[in-house]
Structures are given as structure tokens and as C-alpha cells.
Image 1 (cartoon, rainbow, N blue to C red):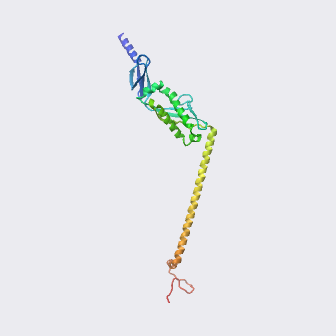
Image 2: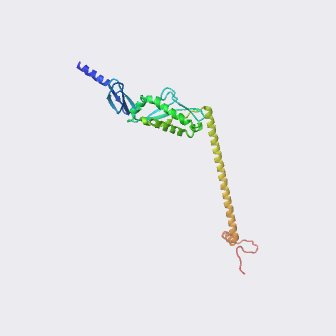
Image 3: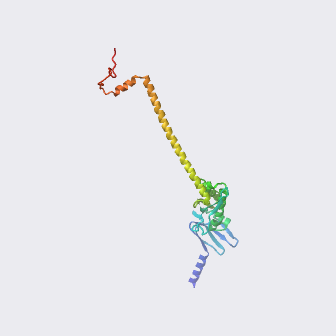
Length: 271
């Protein structure tokens, strides 16, 4: 009998305990009594007594990543893509991933604000805040900017807005990622691709023209240099006619010609 009572008491004690798992912070919530409400004290890893009407909620303090996607094989089995518009009202959509963690000291404040666990915050407040920031930021940009050179700038601005919003409540927004390409209507995408192709062809043509011009300038420079060299050489010979005779002597092999006009080459006799 005594053994049965010990087992019963032990089971009752265990039933009245809650745990905070490693990598998490706990928040104690009392439903009844003078201490009803959310405790301002964050709970570390361990086992805690939770009498009737008391619950412990957990938030992760390590980095977690969640992907809001159109695919049913990631995140929730529903379409969680973000829909937004460019400054001309063109409808766009995209999948976005978020890395987040919870500030241990501010965890009670986060629960007081939203009264839900981490999954509830991800599905509700966090997704709504990302969507609102994306809608507001994208409305100031054109589709070619969003799809092209300013794509990362857009997401960086959205991340900054979302992080600033949740910072006072202890939800750390560490990084936002595009989880794929921004989805653009097919007709618009074809126009963008054609424009990019035309721009690439124009750049290639400009490069070819520049190459031809450079080669022509090189030929002109070489011809001008050669003409100047010939001109300088002629002026030198005119100013020093003996140079020509000296060059001829340097090239002479020392043999006298068999038939001459009566003179001896390179030899002048003084009278």
C-alpha cells in the first residue's frame, strides 16, 4: 500500500511539472490566483513545478529558419507565398525565408505582446509584418528593378523594417532570403528578357566598334611614326651627305668592279 502511494505521489508530482528544453527559453503563464498572468521572469533550461492552471511556453534562442513558400512540401502544406505589386500596379509574387531567434531576457515581453508560441508568431505576426514591409517597399520600384539589379536591395530594406519592428519585443530577425526567383507574369518576363538580350547585343556591338577604332588608331600611329622617321632620316642625310658615302663604304666587300666608267668607287684622289 505504501509503495502504491509513493508511486501515486510521484506520478502526481511529475504531472505537475513542465520542462524547458535545451536551446529554448521558457515563459510561465498562470491562469488563476493572485499571480495570474505572464511571469516577467524568463525560465532557463530545466524542469519546473506547474500546478493546476500553470503552463510553460517555449521560444527558441538558437537560430531557426522558416520558408514561406507556394510549395506544399516546405513550411505549411498551404500556399504561403507573398503577393505584392510594383509602382505601376503589376502583380508579383515570391517565396521568402527568414532566420530568427528570441532574446532570452525579452521572451516574456514577446509572449505578452502576442500570447502565442513560436509557431503562432511565425504564421501570424511575423508573416504579416514581412508582407506589409514588402508591399510598401516594392510599391516604390519598377518591375525591372525588382526582378533585376535592385532585387537584393528590396529584400534588405524589408529585413531592416521587420527587424526594427520586432526588436523591442525580443524577436531577432537575423536574415531574409529570396527562396527562388520573383514570379512575374509570363508576358512581362518575355519583354524583360528581350530587352536584356537587346542590351547585350548593343554592348557587344559597341565593344566591336571600340576594338576596330583602337586597331585603326594603332595603324595610323604606326604609319605616322614611320613617316616621321623617314622624314627625319632624309633631313639628316641632306644635312650630312658624307653619311651616305660612309654607309656605302660599310657595305662594300672590298672588291673592285671589273668594268667601270673610269672612276674608282669611294676613292677620290686629291689633285
